[in-house]
Image: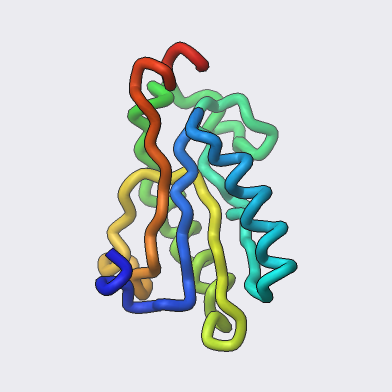
Length: 130
């Protein structure tokens, strides 16, 4: 809920595979230019499938089920650092942050909880389109 967000100037869009998240990311970038907010695509984005060009060698070699991926502690720490850096000036310019990610413990990493958004899709349709 928006009321629970400690940082009302940051929106995190959880990119879930096969729910139109790439299109939402592009819409976010276009709206950012029109409405005056920064759209940030996480540079260290966790690759769910292991087939992305942004995947590290360890991500490509790690056996993983695409619907049940949980990043290791180093990836979570790197995300927390990058997120804090990218959103540090959100009081001046609001930020929309896009990233594939499972649940993240904001308090544990000492990051102010942002507004969280995501999309869902019927599970059978999602698997069929994979």
